[in-house]
Length: 188
Ligand SMILES: [Zn+2]
Ligand SMILES: [Zn+2]
Image (cartoon, rainbow, N blue to C red; front, side, top):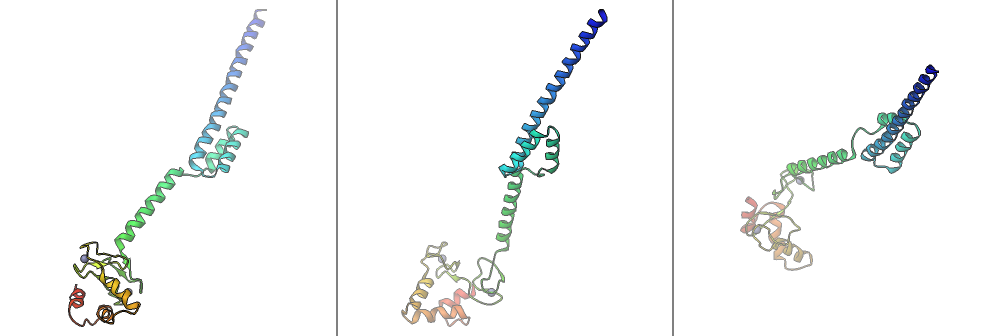
């Protein structure tokens, strides 16, 4: 009688322990599913793949999460993005350090070169006032605010204007300065 009661208590305690164990395992399983979801979202951009990982963790308790942890991408998406941005910035810095290349012969030239030292072609026109190198797209000199006259004279020459403008522009372009202001600008 006493032993039976003892057995009953023992049985109750055992089933309680078993129930708690099952509860613990279920809680752990659901936590692992949640962890898989949160981790996959940070590592995988494709929502279909994130869903697949979560379903695998749900359908195959514990094993699904373990398999996911083996095959998951090694990096977080934000780390990948940050590294790509850093690489882009480094490339931009590098190209700035290297400067430009000559559009005719790809020789490395500085931004303020007036002529390419390799193929001797004209890269930029000097400002008439301050002799700083001007980008052909500029309408005024950004250094001294002088109007860019070379582009205007070239445009007039193309549209059939005065012949004096091309003769003044040519010595600067083909070498051999004739005399006067263009020669002084060339020397710089
Ligand atoms: Zn060149
Ligand atoms: Zn200027």
